[in-house]
Image (cartoon, rainbow, N blue to C red; front, top):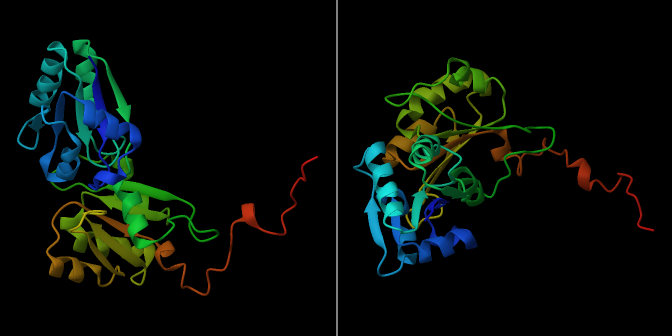
Length: 253
């Protein structure tokens, strides 16, 4: 049988892909992190065995996957957002390969995309910002590569999306002022797409006060970007060359 790593998206069950929905509905075992994807579990069948991983270590989680495979049961391993970001996919699949267990991956809506949709913004705006950096910072977590310090990534000046960083928003905002300026727009979206969604807008100068007042502690992304204010900024008048009426277009024969 197969282990399916499925992107559960930001939390709303109706944001799953068609493939992800089918896999969740048909799986014999669903392994999930209860903190993030509980809404998706309503799609599971009545006989599906549910395994909450929030109190399990990596070896215990993989043990559940291997045991289900050996019992001839298809498994869905739900990942919050998209499996390509901060999902421990590498560690889990390395162990599954060693155990001879087949697996595949179904993508999901990443949290930053859900946050941008809530804000109604595009993170790449012509002649203003064309690069999006998805990153995190280190506190009590896995060390960051030396070349990927916050100062180094911020120096690019693109749209910066910080995951797993909400508890350090004050120190991060202070550090980012040097690269972006204190007036740079910032948006924080917690529980994107869910009923308890929280949106905070501000600048690097004041966003920490608002986040702390709201008591946000997890499940949030921080977006720092001049693109956040581009729709109402009269100075942002450049538009995409692709759709420019003045661009020469080849007429069909």
